[in-house]
Length: 295
Image (cartoon, rainbow, N blue to C red; front, side, top):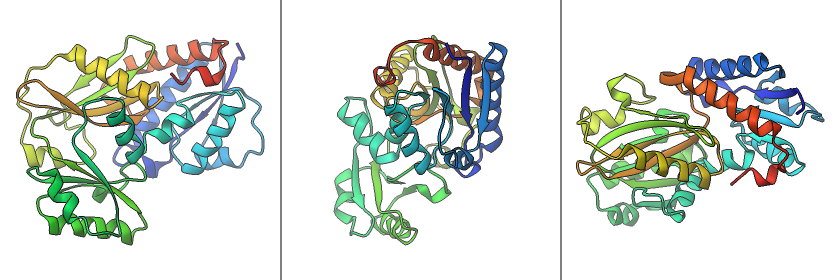
């Protein structure tokens, strides 16, 4: 195995309220690889893009800049091993995630994708729920308004119009589901999986869900089924290092409501660091072509 690799840090704008946590997990994984004899060259996202050629075949990245993701996809097609894959990072953009999970049979709230420059009254009524979540369609949440709960058509239209004003061309409208919010973290091809109630530990980007549903009721559910479903979701989106959120209803049924590439792992970073390091060492040593590692 080549004993050199490149690590790409996440820009602060893509770490809302988690800048420090995202940097810590990146630095811990970097140190873990170094302790196993891997020579690491670290880049910020924009600095990596200024490089005209990259000789190293192994890259681990928390980057989300769209230009960076496109460049990573080119390098992956050339045979470089990249985790998470640029293709996977792109599949975690909101609309891609929603369509990928629904088409793959993962339980997901009823949702409608709409252009922001249109009247969304009909879409709002079709969801027929006690309120609607509106999320920007083109990317992850960066600003507070990028994930908004509304309880009327007028509020919904206002948020969608605000997206259009900001240059966001698409939005996802999803039904509101009552229940407990659960956050989970996983690393595919390892035994690592961790879940918890974020509002019980004051670990959240935005305090919206607790404001609407109240404190966690701790409804019992099958944690093994959640892990299997999360793994399926991560495989569908072609990411190995992942995290997400689920809603557990009073009957123990759950829906995945979000899945993203390489989260902070803040409540479990020591265990996660060991699992991520194990994954990267294994994949970098594997002789499989990069295109075979997506599944």
